[in-house]
Length: 294
Image 1 (cartoon, rainbow, N blue to C red):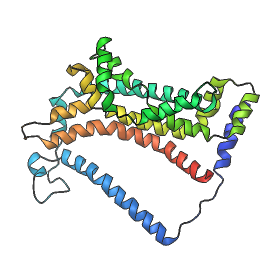
Image 2: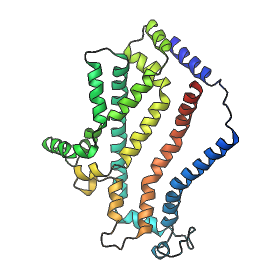
Image 3: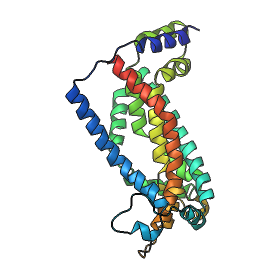
Image 4: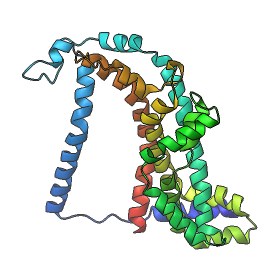
């Protein structure tokens, strides 16, 4: 098929470039900055994992022990029994899958409209979209809660998902990506008789896969870790999500079992880490393609 051949030819031609070498001092500086970034991000993660295998007395021990003296799995059992994590996992998976799916679909279709369709006052609507980027989510919480309360959606999945089903950032990011696509391929699709839906599905989405995966990963992480809105929109343990489960493990009287909290945090972090490891291949491909193109 002509459209698929055009997409394949474009991908293979983008991988034929040669990478230029940096001078030694710039390379050493780059590696040094990467090492600092790795330590800044990696040390808290290591501390979380190590503390999950320690007893509480060892966590408070001075000097700090970086490797557990007597590793134990008891913290994982205590965390799982302290809160209904099975139910929390189910609720978080449902709200994340449906919420992120809705965000990706709405962002893709609206970005296509802003990039390629002609309609009155398009520039004004795009300015309105940019203005929406400046509004913090916390400002809309009261309005959203009153809306779902009038609809009878408090303590329901739709009450958690629908108010966050669209995000201006995704539309803006994907519109900029769509505008950078080669016009020749889009014109070839139109010559072959492809309509807007066919062009979007067969040309625009395959060429924009790195940006879509990146936005999807950002959306999944945001939905998975969302704490405030599910806390406001639900009032029973059956509808709570994983981040609220971590909050249940904290003791407000100052006797928190940090090993148990860290074990519960691993329950939350591990699925997102697996998704990131799967998605990073597509993100790296996108960065490499952009570098070669530039």
